[in-house]
Amino acid sequence: MSPEDSIMTSEQAVHTRAPYWVDVDPAEWYDWRWQMSNRLNSVDELASVIDLTDSERKALESQGLFRVDITPYFASLIDPNDPHCPVRKQVIPTATELVPFQAMMEDSLAEDKHSPVAGLVHRYPDRVLMLVTTQCASYCRYCTRSRIVGDPTQTFSKRDFDMQIDYIENTPQIRDVLLSGGDPMVLAPKLLDMILSRLRAIPHVEIVRIGSRVPVFLPMRVTDEFCEMISKYHPMWLNIHVNHPKEITPELAIACDRLTRAGIPLGNQSVLLAGVNDSVHIQRKLVQDLVKIRVRPYYLYQCDLVHGSGQFRTPLSKGIEIMEGLRGHTSGYAIPTYVVDAPGGGGKIPLMPNYLLSQSPGKSVLRNFEGFITTYQEPLDYDPQEVKHLEDQIERRPEKGQEGILELLEGEKMTIEPKGFDETRSRGGKEHRLRSGGLSRKWLPLGVGSIEAEDGTVPEQLPDPQEND
Ligand SMILES: *Cc1c(COP(=O)(O)O)cnc(C)c1O
Ligand code: SF4
Image (cartoon, rainbow, N blue to C red; front, top):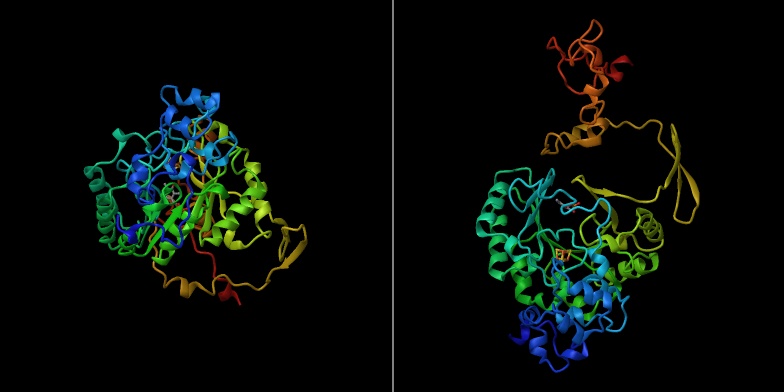
């Protein structure tokens, strides 16, 4: 390893390391390959660094446990004598991890079901999640993808990449590709470079982003060489994954500084974890410490309903309380969006306290973070059509079937019905003189959408109010 390649210069030398590794040569300690090949995973190795509890030993010795691997750097952040250490809880299993809970699933976000090809989840209209590996630098006990993560036999092949990239090439509405896994930053550098260059060659892919916990588990991986490689493919974005202020070390700060200097905007995704960060005060310190190292809190995730996450789950009300304690109380830049990734594959649903207290035509009553109640007087002569000629100049890439509530607001449709709605409401009855055919004109709302009636006529347009002047 060349000195420039090391994460530390001599002036910056900081040593986040447990006594177990004091004799390791700094050139090795700051070499990410050394960190990867010296990860802890057995009971004996772990016991030599921390004082294991009976529950931890029991879990580590059990069959079918989600993979354990901890980089020496990250293990050094653990308080060896405190079973409640927030860093420890994220990476060392306890016996409660093995306890099943109601509604637990293997793939609670139905990712594999919503993948047109293996490892490519296309859930939203204009962006895809591309899984490029099942390997990580260390393994989080609550991992949402534990069904494949950590298992080398599940990892993705060259043929999988080809199919993922083919799909993206042939799907012009995809403008954003999110690389995840596993952790894309543990891929062989050449392989990641190859994937990025192939994505960059697709004209409709506007941005590429990476979700990675490597800067947190293995900050030494963020070498100048790595930053140079990534910056060939701008615009690149990167989200890291920090859950507790203890993880924000000088090493992480340096890694983030390198990435930002390479022009990569950084965000943070954290998971709301019972006994780790389910506290307004811990979260406030976390987000404030993140903006100090120029990382913008992006999402705070509710724990998913996956195997192993039972002990970490909180009620949604805890998340709402945390958001109540952030908005207004600290910089807007430091506030993430709290989301529940909907079980069954519904995607991310944002939640926050209610700030809208009441409404009448022309008035909205709002409250602020302090409980101050105010009235926003609304314009009575607002013309939503005024912007129309500008709006028409904007190119759209619509995708049928995902217009959602917006479609109702824009007057394309009047209702959205649950599956089987019309069948249930017909109560098994037959066609009769008042009910004939599903498309009868009597159920077509005037001026909404462009559905043709049975006789092929389009419902009359509403008269233009201006023509009546
Ligand atoms: C989270 C996620 C994305 C990205 O969502 P953003 O809200 O744009 O960050 C894309 N695809 C899938 C399947 C996801 O889970
Ligand atoms: S780094 Fe991400 S993918 Fe890897 S174990 Fe943790 S949560 Fe799962």
